[in-house]
Image: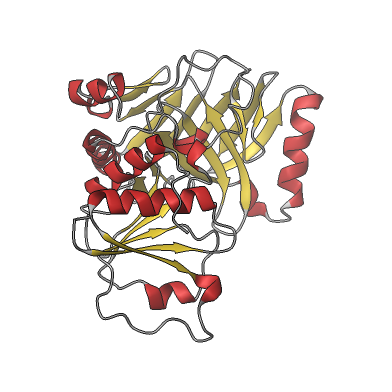
Length: 334
């Protein structure tokens, strides 16, 4: 699969991320792929591992014999997972102690603007600590958003893209923190304003829409018919009341470099890779594990945990903001 026709910048970015995941010279590493994996991305992974000096091996699950792969003499220390769907063969190929970097980018183009840095992991961990210590999370903005959820006993999570611990599986590039609301506590309003994004439809909001929550559920959708009809139809198509339950509030922490900030209705930005993880974006999602409701991506929200500002007008604050070293890495990228 190896070819010299690779994006050298993508190789440098991936090699740096693999180093952060403690990939080391002279140790075995596996690239897992299938028929849907982008060949350029496969080549990039192989070149990145070889640049580090790891003993790389590409394995296509489509070529494995029935029953999976035989046990390897030296199981890989790190696995770069490019599988588009879960495969039963994955269990036989991945040691329980392996570090797994699951690349969620679809192509090398999705890696443009990614600058691997230890600062992201630190910020994400501090954000998770803030959520775990908090009792209440408040989302607001200048357009009337005023939503509160209880955090006591709620489930929290994080994605930092780091598979640095044996047995760790990390999605990359990712960067976010999130919390489910304590049962029945979500109450207030979300005001979707022009330039915000409807997920997973990936449409820009063009007219103001007000979503009202009470007792943990969405109880009304108000706004122009042209804006709300599709949202109502999507929720109704789920055929499950769970689609109206507030499921999560997530804060994007992934800093993606770009020549300039995106315009209000930047062509393609709403559907761009990792838009929900983008630095300062706040996503309010409904549904549950099996039922996808809607997700509202607010681009200029303010978030406070127990009145301590985590995000102000789309800009992470305090311990969630990059330090001077991470800022310098973005100022002078690879």
